[in-house]
Amino acid sequence: VNYKEKEYWYIVNWIAHEFKNPNEKNLVSLLLKSEEGAGKNTLGHIIKKIYGRYFYECSNNKELYGDFVYQGYEENLLVFVNEASGLL
Image (cartoon, rainbow, N blue to C red; front, side):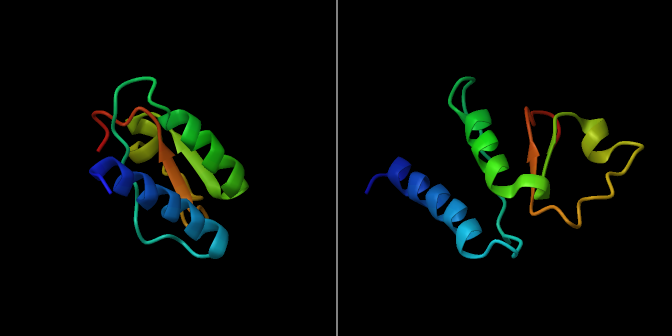
């Protein structure tokens, strides 16, 4: 098993956890960083279909840390930060 295969199966198992335990917050966050066009947004949209209303997407500092604090974080099982460079 090479390094990329281990990463692949880790992500697959991370997603599978959501099917096995749909009402449980995952204690591990994924940070996916790659070149543009690698499929991060595609994966995000697939995961959004799994989570439905428990999925929140933001794409800038103001949405994540700004003046208005999003009140739904507690009910969300996943927060997807799109184009996170400079955010975290």
